[in-house]
Structures are given as structure tokens and as C-alpha cells.
Amino acid sequence: MGTYIARRLLWVPFLLLIVSFITFALGRFGPGDPVEILLGQHFSEEVAQRIRAQQGLDDDIVTQYTRYLWEVAHGDFGESYQYRGRSVTELLQKRIWVSAQLNLAALIISVTLGLAAGLFAALRQGTWWDSATVAFTLVGQSLHVFLTVPIALLIFALKLDLLPSHGWGGFFSPHIVLPALVLGIPGIAIVARLTRASTLDVVGQDYIRTARAKGLPERLVRVRHILRNALIPVITTLGFSLAGLASGSFIVELYFGIPGVGLLTIESLFARDYPIIMAVTLLGTTLFVLANLIVDLIYPVLDPRIRLGGDYVAG
Amino acid sequence: MRDETQRLTLPDSPGNSRSYMYLSWRRLTRKKLAMTCLVIITIMYGSGILAPLVAPYGYNDQNLSIAKQGPSLTHPLGTDRLGRDMLTRVMYGLRTTVIITVISLVTGALVLGIALGLIAGYFGRLADGIIMRVGEVTSSFPDIFLVLIIVATVKPRILQWVRDFEDSSGIDWIVRLGIVDYLVISLALAAFSWFGMARLVRGQVLQARENQYIEAARVMGSSTRRILGIHLMPNIISPVIVSVSAGLGAIAGAEIVLSWLGIGIQPPTPSLGVMIFENGNISVLRSDPHLTLVPSGALVLLLFTFSLLGDGVNDAFNPRVR
Image: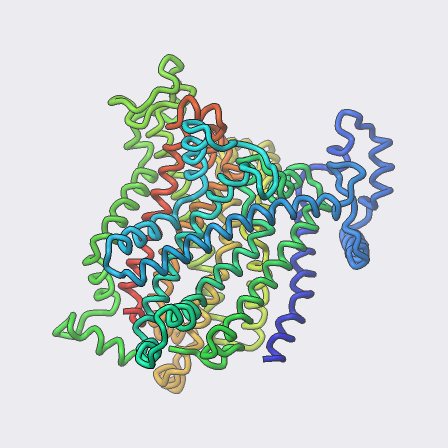
């Protein structure tokens, strides 16, 4: 297990190196001159050349990339092109905090509602509640934000006039409700579906009968034996949602005008703001890879039957 | 595992002579929900492919005197802000979806994914190492960021090359028909989606190649191509079908997101993503909600039917789960 983790962790820097080089090369390959965008209508060839020389944009790509890596290794992600005089680190910090709050809210909605619905459905198998949950889990996963956003806006912002349709005010403002709900809906469906399936699986196991037979109170049976085992698939979803903290919510951020990482990324992509694109890629990839690793590591803790490294396949 | 499948399928076929694929297909046809979804998908894809024939109007026929009308008998889904028929626009938008999903699926999942998966699984060692590492790199980009960045940077360059080529050669229809858009987006999506299939095929091959019939075939002097094509492929085909039916919705969704961002299919070529973007602001929603809800509804119907069909196919083709 130790060697397995070490091997996975050692591979991460190489992965980041390759991913960042691909992004770097693609960025330079793309059209549009950042200096032109920077200067806008005040463009003059003389100034442009001075800035290019200053930023080292005249050098060949390998030189530029090595210099970039050197700076990143010293904790300097450079300066944004579109927001002049602002460091990428400073810009990103604010944006990440916003996106993290939004995604956390969505995650809380998905996990609590999904877990509750799934558990209830499984423990009351065959009732109308169960059927309703199953129907929702089938539809919910396909409810793309492109449909849920307009419907949510139509109902809560236009018809009922309950919630604001645009903007951002932090974790405890009403602005967060609609975007978090919309982001959370597919998650509710996925969590509920997985929870229901795994709970049904667990409920039929012998050790549950044993637990009941030895006189364990029903509450403890549910918490210690059923819930714990039913949680395994939910953890996976949680891991992937963690990875989504960096990137997943950009459509919703664009729709609601929320100043998060997603909005910044899309803006930077159109403005050829290389330093920001690079920083977002590095950050997103790191989070994504680490989240996957964490999920893999949590598995055996929850379910000792699962072995790491693929030397044992259950089935 | 093979023995088990045979035993499991016995009750279905007294003669025991029908192929596994046939039996799986028959199991699928018995599932009402999955078949309904298949019919809906066929209708949607069919109306996309045959859009020029079956669409009631032209996709750019404007009539400002009937702009922004709700659903009526002559325009079942209403008209947009230029008086264009929404049903027609959705059909043409679906044509875009059909083209993109089919090209990405064939190139990404079927050709690249299966071929590289077979090579990685069968030959192992260096080939395996290289293919899996490259795959890990492409799949470690968060979400569809790789597709986004490829399309945003590579497409304008290629468009420029093609325009230069058109100028020098006198051909003028390549850019106008949107062929470049279609190709770049499909290929970027293929680059994004091949690894899932390759990993799946590799895993299946790793299991299957230890079987004695492979060893027997090798002893008999079969060529590698024959072993891969005749002996291994049929044994891994059902997980491939399951994975394809589950992955189509994701590709369709990704194209629509790209077009919505404005870097995918360019107007006037209709795309559901462009329609959703054009009518996505709150003032349109206030006055004419159908302009957004119709294309979004079509997208969700497509995703929904794909996901249900995927479940059905999984049940029918996956002997382990049954």
C-alpha cells in the first residue's frame, strides 16, 4: 500500500509537467496577441515591441516555458494580462474562494438530500415514496443546467419574485440559493440512486440479520451497519465533486454572473490571458488528480474487501 | 466466464445455437422503457439527418411579422425573434448534434479507443505503458477543459489555413458549410473521450487473453491480427456497446456547451447550443420563455433517453449484472 501511494504521488509532478506544457504550447499556438489585447486602442508598434521584450514573448517556446516553470517553482504565477498590475495569485485566491463556497453549497444540497432520499427509499422499498425517488433519480441525472437554470429563474425569480436572478453576495446571501440548487440537482439524483442501490444491497446481507438477531437496537443497525456500508459509493461522488471545485461550475457561474474561477477561466481563454489559463490548468489538474487519489485511498478504509494496486478483483 | 454465460442463456434458447449478440438484442427488445427511448432517439437522430427533407421550413426563412410567436398549428414549437420556425431550427440543430456525436464516436471511441485498448492490453509492456500514460495525461485535465482549450486555440488557426487554401484554389464552400467547425470540434471531443474506451478494452483484453483458446490459437499459428480480430474482439464487444450507449449523451452535451460558449458551431449553422445562448438572457425569459425552453428541452430529452437506453443496454448486454 505504501509503495502504491508513493508511485501514484511520484507520477503527479510528471503529469503536471506534461499537462502544463500542452496548455502552454496550445496557448502560444492560438491566435491573438496578448500585447495587442493589453494595449487595446492605444496600440503602437514601438510600445508593443518593448512590452514583448520585457515579458520575454520574443523568445522561443521552450525558453519561455522553462522560465515560466522557474517562476512557478518560486511561487510566482506571473501577472495577469487583462487585469493589469494584478498578480495571478491574488486574482485567483478571491475567485477560488467564491467557487468553493458555491460548490460547497451545491455539495451539501446533493449529499444531504440525496442521502436522505436514497436511504428512505431503500428502507421503504415498494412504497410510493420509493417509486417517486426512483423516477426522480432517472430524470434528475439528465437535468442539464441549460434547462434547470431557465426554469428555476422563471419560477423563483420572475413569477414568485423570491430570489435574485443575478450576482453574488457570499455564502449566506440569497444569491447563492438558485445557482447552488441548480448545480446540486444532478448530484441529488446520483447520490440518491447510489445510496438506494447500495442500501438495498446491504440490507439483504447476513450480517444485518446477525446484528438484529443479537438484539442491536434498530437505530444502531442502521447507523453502524447499513449507513456505513451504503456510504462507499457516495464517497466517490464526493471525491469527484471536490475536483469540480476548480472547474465544474463554469456554466452556472456564467449564467448567474458569479465571479468565480469558471467565469475567470472563460474570460481569460477569450482574452488570451496566458498566465491565468496556465495557473487554472495547473491548479485544476492537481486538484483533479489528488481527488481521484484520495477517493482511491478512502475506498479500502470503508471497505476492507477492496485491495489497492489491482492485485485482487472482487467478483 | 464463458461457461457461465452459456449456462445463463440456456433458458432463452432451447436450440442453444443463437449468437450471444442476438440473445442480448432480444433481451433489449423486451425492455419497454429502453425500446421507447430507442424509438425517441431514432426519431430525433432521424429528423436531424433528414432535416432538409422533413423540416417544414428552411432554417433561415425569416418572417418578421410573425416573430416570437408561441406554439401554434403552423409553427408547432413557435417562432424565434426573426420569425424563424423553432421546430425547423431544432431539427437542424439536432443535425449538428448527430454529425458531431457520430464523428467523435467513430474516431474517438470506436477507432482510437478500441485499437489502442487492444494494443495496450494484448502487447503489454512498452505499448501499454505509453498508451496508458498518454491517456492519463489527457484525462487529467479537469472536466472538458482540454476540449475547450483545443477548440479555442486550434480552430481559428485551422480556419485561417483553410481560408488561405480557398483563396488560392478557388474553392469556396469548405468554410461556408461549417466543415472545419464540425471536424475540429469532433476531433477535440474524440481526444477527450478515447481513453475511457481504451481503458475498458484493455481491461477486458487482459482478462480474455489468459484464456486457453487464445493460447490454442497462438499454438495453431494464428496471426496477431487474427487473434485480436477474430478471437478477442467478439468477447469484449458487449462492454464496448454498453460504454458507447452510456457515453453518447456526454458527447452531445459537450458540443452544446462549446457552441453555447461561442467557440463551437458558428451561426448561421443552427446548433442547440447557439439557440440556448441567443435566448438565454433574463429578458427573453420574461417575455418568451419558449425560445429557451424548446432547445433546452430537446437537449434534456436527448440526454434523458440516452441515459435510460444506456441502463437498458447495460442490463441486456452485461452478463455479470443479470
